Image 1 (tube, rainbow, N blue to C red):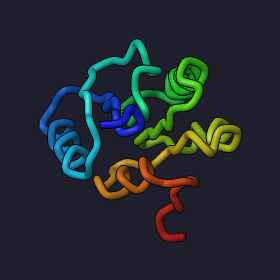
Image 2 (spheres, rainbow, N blue to C red):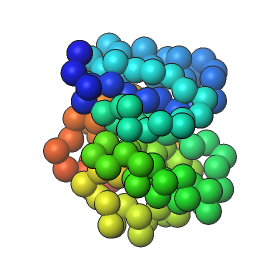
Image 3 (cartoon, rainbow, N blue to C red):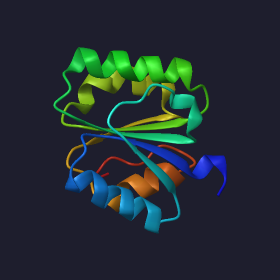
Length: 122
């Protein structure tokens, strides 16, 4: 499996993370499930289920990952996608903020996209 297909799935360890990891694996990705992520550059892409992360922490962590992982695609699933509007505008080729809840196929589309995914209803 190529390095681009290696995905770090960052989320609280629960049944939904396991189900999402299995869905992504069935779509051909090599998924590593993580509670926290210290080395984002070891993955071809990152998926973060940000759950209850507040806006300031959300932006700070994403900016940090963008600096550390210079080429990786970063997908954030959050109930606060507007908090990332400016960061997405600056890094839209790599950063996607999807509103929670998200379907597995939406993540697969974002991981495979050559351009950012279209917002729902567009």
